Image 1 (tube, rainbow, N blue to C red):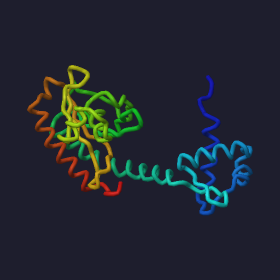
Image 2 (cartoon, rainbow, N blue to C red; image 1 turned 90 degrees about the vertical axis):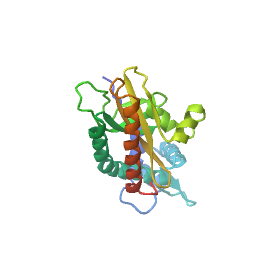
Image 3 (cartoon, rainbow, N blue to C red; image 1 turned 45 degrees about the vertical axis):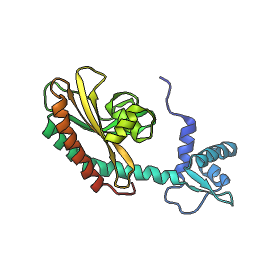
Image 4 (cartoon, rainbow, N blue to C red; image 1 turned 60 degrees about the horizontal axis):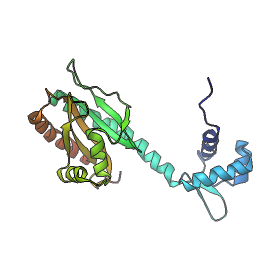
Length: 227
């Protein structure tokens, strides 16, 4: 089977790896010598990395680590801290409602189930952690799109109400979701509780919304304001 490893991506990562533990900048010549990548390719890759914020070029032509690397580092730190604060809240939501509780983040045009606590019912709504689903489908997708400023009556209502509850695309499931933000208003993701529609009706969804709102407020207190 043909290898799926991209030679171009590997070379770009080799360049970035040169900056590990360094405080000084590197010239194109130094990068080429250290990696064995020819000069023209180094120039092209460094220009691309510079344009995307992973490297920055000073007036002397030296390259340094760019701000986008720090953004990724912040995400990594946040994901570790998120696991510590979100999992207990999801378990509490699961135990209080009896239904599955999840936390999603947005990645481009997809919504990713980052953390999940499945219902203990034998018959339940199931999504695996790490599942990538279309952003424009489902209750969570609508919440994330609304918080991103998408236009339309549905999104306006979500922003006004601060939640979205509906029977899902699957007619046998129902969900209620809320956005999760820091105190400064930075969107982190969305929490959702989902279950079988005949067990998770309007009355129960209203009670669940109260629990989700409380959990969201708890998270806002725990998350760094500048996240």
